[in-house]
Length: 236
Ligand SMILES: [Zn+2]
Image (cartoon, rainbow, N blue to C red; front, side, top):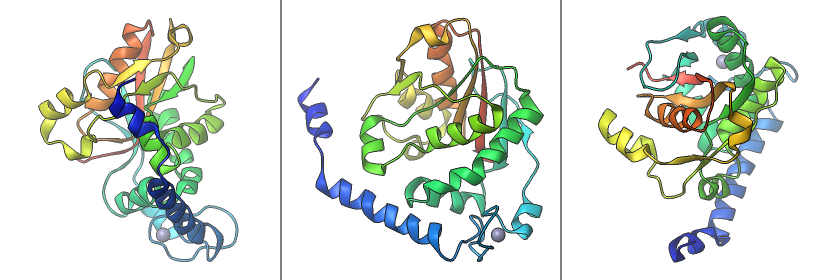
């Protein structure tokens, strides 16, 4: 392990304070009053956290033209535009990790309607260990876990992401994204993926570079096929 990685792996009280603050922010939304995860209007004390108006306005799941190589098919639950975008940013960065309970059924529907359920293994595109430590949770794992509950299969962690990969959101264009993500993942348990038809879950699809690279290493490790399901997809 390099000195730089060692430094990054040491606990950081600042990062921990930031995670705690985010969790407390998330808790405010969790406890009272319960708010719609999209428009933030108060919803009833029980049941879905999406108000009837927002639920009626949600798009139907869709599958798109394949944007990256390596994976076979791709489907998404919703488009990555407001109010979903703002909701997702609270989920990913604002401590609202419990939004996964609402997103899971959207993703499971997208899989059932667009891809079918003929999979041997559900896995997900992880964040790096360093980022997970700072954030306190891996949002893709939470999505995969909630989706897996509805599809009757618990997700298995098969990939590890290197730390110090620049976030894809800070890159521009397809080529830079492909270069940035190349080599970012390695398969941590090749035996689990060999010969398997895999459903790979990720949060947001933009150019498809990230899921494409994750699919590439899974196939190289012996997976039979990889289909991708994302919570949201950027319109272009
Ligand atoms: Zn609403």
